[in-house]
Image 1 (cartoon, rainbow, N blue to C red):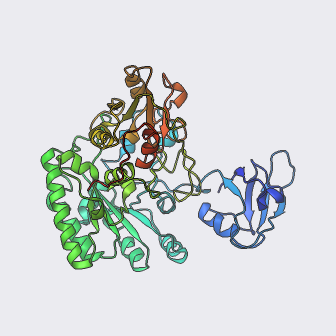
Image 2 (image 1 turned 120 degrees about the vertical axis):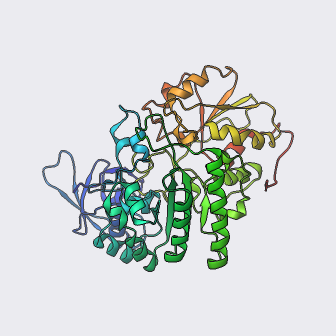
Image 3 (image 1 turned 90 degrees about the horizontal axis):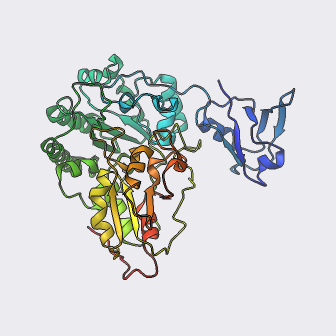
Length: 464
């Protein structure tokens, strides 16, 4: 069991007034050693919590009473979300992206978690193969909701084979327990062509409707395959296969709508790009609950970009959300995100993005009335394969493209490819060959960066 370490203190907060310092280890709160940030917040939420603190240079541990009323934050940021050991994944899925990483990256990127706490805090998907009765008791008692569950297949043999774990055949029993206990669950099916598509996918969706009707949503996403995969059975979707998945999902949406009054299942935006089909309108996504899973993300971005709105989704910082660069409080915490510091700048603009972004952005940006904005695709040679999302861009590939950008251009880069200021290949913003403006990955942020007083028009419509 580790102890949370104080990384920041709000000036004038109860913790500051009580004498807590950055670097202090919080050994216990009210005589309890918290397992994770969830329990930490529960322990510090009441009146006058008592901390036992270990401080560097002090021979004895300190007892500090934090004078505060119930519900008032103590004003402390801690070092991590989980203070004991993160529950790692003991599955060996052939489609797992961790197995497709190049060698030599920082160790934290190779961590495979299957921890329900990170599912609650960050929206990570868990297979439930390491879930226990004690876990279920805690989730239900503390109502840790929503949770995100990787389903992939409901046929026990197919699921066990996909996860390469015999517990994959039985672990969905916990899904029923959680749903019956009132926990909101969002499911995911990663489709691997020739393995769990076609009839298997249809059976999965029908079984979920029949046996797990309380599921809030099911996101159907395609396999991501890098050049570093060593799995001969894994292959990228063809256009025809993507088309077939969309047809199946949309047919199941209609079935769910009739039976449950809601669509439940959604295909990711990537499927529509692969199939070269028009994306559904934003209203089809029922509030876009799987935005972070790439479902409805493009239509949301479009809405933010093409009209003034204070409502927008913010992409989590970094691809490996729970490991690098994410706040210990979890994905619900407020992030400080950089915005363009040169709003109103009249210089020409180059926007760097992934292959999918290069397909989506040009017709949208054109509607802002600027003819001096260039969208530049950054081909992902670092990962290769069919990896085309902006969130997996690395400094090595960005630098190659930056060499072609005119010196007088502003260069905009989405923050989704960064954890802090660090790319997945280990390089930082300072390693880029020229300065770039890092923008929050949202249509609202891009709109602010591109619209300036000299713009010939302001666009306030929503594209359907």
